[in-house]
Structure formats: C-alpha cells, structure tokens
Amino acid sequence: MSILEILGGILIVIGSLFLFLGALGIYRMPDVYNRLQAGTKATTLGAMSLILGVGFLMPDWIMKILIIIIFIAYSNPISSHALARAMHLRKRFMFFKNEEIDAYKEIDKN
Amino acid sequence: MTYIIYFSLTIMIFGLILSAIRFIKGPTAGDRTVALDTMTTIGVSGVVLISYLFNRYIYLDVALIYGVLGFIGVIVIARYLEKAL
Image (cartoon, rainbow over all chains, first blue to last red; front, side):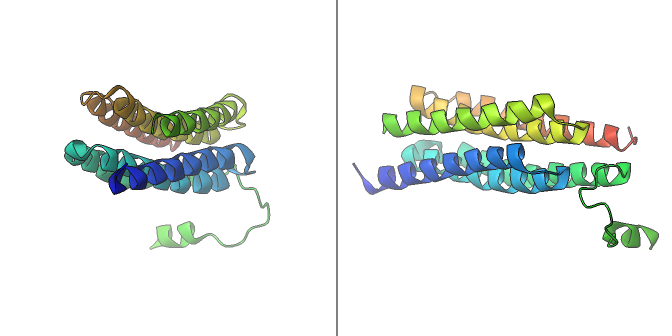
C-alpha cells in the first residue's frame, strides 16, 4: 500500500464526512439563508476533497479530475449567490423578523 | 480500499436521504432548490466514486455533464424566482 493510496483514502473519508455534514445542515437549519450557508460551503469542500482523493488513487485520470474540481469550485458559489439574491428579492423569508441591517438595498440605491 | 469506498458511499447515501427529506417537506421554493443543489453535488461525487470502483474512465464524463446540468438548472430556477425570466 503506497503513500498515494493512504492519502487518497484519507481524503475520500474526509470528503464524504463533509458531504454528510452539509446534508445534515440542510436538514437541521431553521432558515433558507442558513441552509444555503451550510449546504453550499461544506458540500463544495467535501466534493473537492473526495474527487481529489480519487485523483490520488488513479494518477492517470488527473487531468479530467482537475477539470471537474475547477468546475465545482466556480459553479457552486455562483448558484448559491443567485439563490440568495432571489430569496432576498422576494422579501418573505426572514428568520429574524426585526432585522434592520439591509446591505443589499444600500448597494442597490447607488 | 474497497471497504473505504463502500463506507463513503453509505455515508453519502444517508446525506442524500436527509436532503431528500428537506426537498419533500421544505416550506418554500428556495429550500427545495437548495436541497436540489446539495443532492446534485452529492450525486456528482457518487458518480466519481463509482467510476473508481468499476475502473471506468468514461464515467467521469457522466459526472461532469451531470454537474453542468445541475448548475444550469439551479441558475434557471433562481432567475425564475426573481421574476426576471
């Protein structure tokens, strides 16, 4: 068992644990913004770690695996940002009712 | 190494079940879309693991195209919820 296989196995286990924790955050969090926070960031880290672990196990596949990692690294924050913007523009899903800070409105006036 | 792959797939299936519960009973459309995004990412990782388990290089293309389609779907749903589509 070489050093690359040990490193790949550790990365795969870490990635699957982060994917499970992201899904647990989706299930447990009270608001749509908290669910976005838990479900997007932990899932991005978990998927990148797990796919890099498979790349360590199979060194011939590293080019396509790097393509998948780069695609996940830019597509997941973009979709999270678009969803948060849409949910803010609909104005109905505040968990804290009396919140006074609205930075998006101040940006939008300029 | 095969048992590590089976262990990871089992944990990911539990995560997929939790996301599916939120997808079914989520109160608003945004919760369902977030759950769909998480399910897509877990599915991409699962396809990559199955590609290693069956030793097939061509399944990585399946994972890449699945990721592209999930990304486009989430963007389209978000633009529709903004009433901008």
